[in-house]
Length: 147
Figure 1 (cartoon, rainbow, N blue to C red):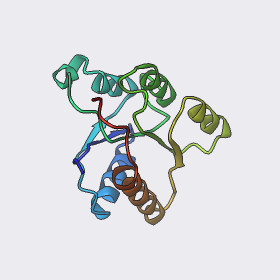
Figure 2: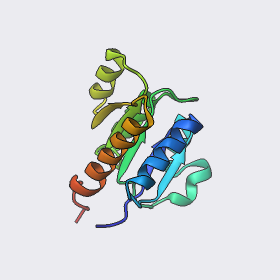
Figure 3: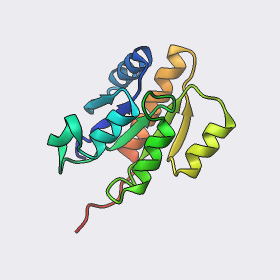
Figure 4: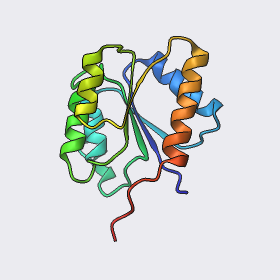
């Protein structure tokens, strides 16, 4: 299995550190790239602005996307991901503190692959990250590479 990158789109430094620590504690050794706002995430995925040197680079194996982001919301980011033929099938997991049914419904309407509410306790949070990482990076079978 290729060592696929994880793209974490998270603006809260405390949540970012918890997610990164949880991945390390779960022995998920994949590299994690972090974007801290919606526009930066789209620039990363579409190799624009500061990420222009990523043109032709492999997409991440999974995107962990917060909904409440500066510049562009997580839903706006997800909408752009799904509109582009290169990224339309990219696995996107919504990882948010929101418990709103409207956010969950909107995420699934935009074809999010999963919606996970951030648990409050560190132990529960770590366990959720561990299971997500193992599922999306080990068990999930992505689309085949173009022939």
